[in-house]
Image (cartoon, rainbow, N blue to C red; front, top):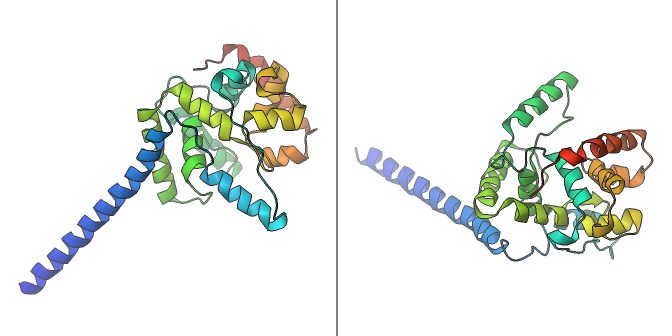
Length: 234
């Protein structure tokens, strides 16, 4: 009997400690998200990871990024990204279940991962806090952070941060750096055609940084441009 009691106490102690540790860990995420409601994140986990990779080849390398407020980013880029990345962004609460189902079906048809189905909020959650590893635990954490972002921030703020931290090339982050890197203009001056081109690059930005004349990129940009007028932005 004493052995059973001792085992039960040990189990309760371990479980309680695990719950407390998990709560503290999640609160750390939540506290940062609360801070970023009205403060701009200076960097992200993904940006730091990419910089470490680049510095292995170029020790003095620096990322190109310049924060710009939401109102100083072209509406053409905003509409294009909604079309390309998350058409239901305004309406969903962080997850596009139909989009996920379509992505799973497409991946099964191709026999490999060709579509992700992640919303803008999910992408932001991953970029802000998580590594690039693929695991069930990481997906669960991504979902938890996605819920936190949607609870604390409005859609406009989520989109503003996303536009400023999204990767657009090798060491290129954010709309301002991307506009200057590819077209020599600021983010406010992007035309519908240029906005569509940047949005089309998002799934494989480093690849398209090297292969800017890709026929697929050209065709996909045209498709996005045709649909932009109907896009709803926050």
